Length: 292
Image 1 (cartoon, one colour):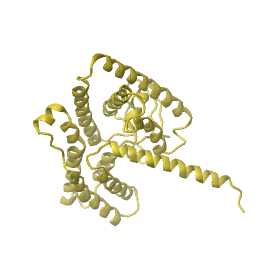
Image 2 (cartoon, rainbow, N blue to C red):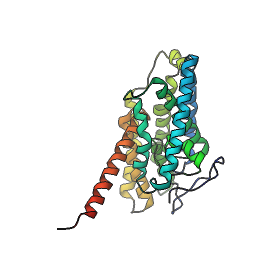
Image 3 (cartoon, rainbow, N blue to C red):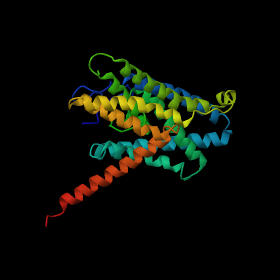
Image 4 (tube, rainbow, N blue to C red):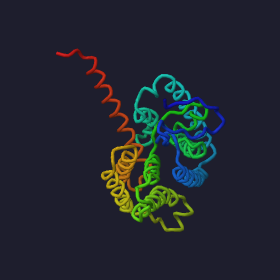
């Protein structure tokens, strides 16, 4: 069961799977929360710096669009929570809620709508960190209002998987290569996910004369990914082996995004969600087709 009724205004306690381990896409481990809090703080700073230059009429339109987006998301979430989200893959459920974000790159709708949607997503970053909900940011407000949580995915789940993997003992104590890999991973998320957003804020951008982190910084993930992959390969079948293998896979998948985070990773989640829905649909059709 991936959803659980909760008091709407009370931050829920973290949940764990049947084996006692945090559920990625639902539960938020400590370091993952710190990363989200840091990212949310910088994102708020960025929006305040950017939106402070809007004229009064445009800002009002943006706020009205924000209210509209929030209302629509909450109503749709409540409806899908009742009859769909527990029946489809979390990838597919997340893709459904991320589809409206395509309005910006496809230039659909007025600019105020794009900024209203961005403001709503920013609120999601803040609420996820405060309520310890590790799912999709665009569903953070609906989960709080409806008291229902579902397992949905976010680019920040890559950090969650890495944290859970490094928290699982490699055997024989904390070996130096294990510690180094964990530290490199933490530095990566700070330098490649948070720093570029901070450098986009006008005061910082002017101070550093438009400096941008190089794309090759993402390649540092090859070290922790190789470390986790080798550990998984040499481990006996079990939950730890699966945790290490999945963390290695997701770290490798994060490398192509470079400093374009989390935008490109949201796109990846949508593609996987659509593919998962298609595969499931084909399997159902084959199951209903008479043999021979």
